[in-house]
Length: 263
Image (cartoon, rainbow, N blue to C red; front, side, top):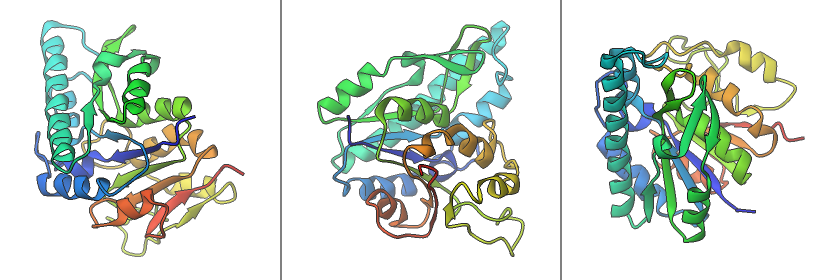
């Protein structure tokens, strides 16, 4: 058993989601500093943000690639996603974290948009050697659609089944889950704890995010990880607010939403 925490750095946090391949470098550097203080073994997964969602739309590869132009677009999208991973790993390394980027393109295969193969051995071996694996949203080959985006959330969902983490911490650009969209409704209230009793109400309040996100927004993320949150706490925290992600990973009290369905 690996006593490991899975940490997600959302694409909306580390990139400007409204500007093509634009990183929030200051935020990445600050988060790297926060993560460098954590003593627990970690697997870090980051979203692709504007390095993934924009090209996927631009090249029309949301539903696979079927011609020469889309094929080229697919390969370019992979390059952009790797560029972002290099930026993130560079920041982590600068703060003394032995981060190694592991592209899903090289380790994952999908079948009609679901992960059908995942070489997690490389992740296990990296952890065993005291390295910090850093995976990310990335296009991968697909046995039905030739190639498809594979979100960081899908990667986390699979990793969680294999590694059974002590917790999954999601760094996003909101304080947690609300009764309605806090960006459009000033009366939206934060829901600090989600259990079996209020789960359905919470899911129905989660409207699809109205951004460039091609992976279904917050509702998509939660549905992707619902099964895993039955085994370990899933904490959603605002990673744009200094210190909160670190506190959540350390198991300290902070403004957030915690899914506890494991009872």
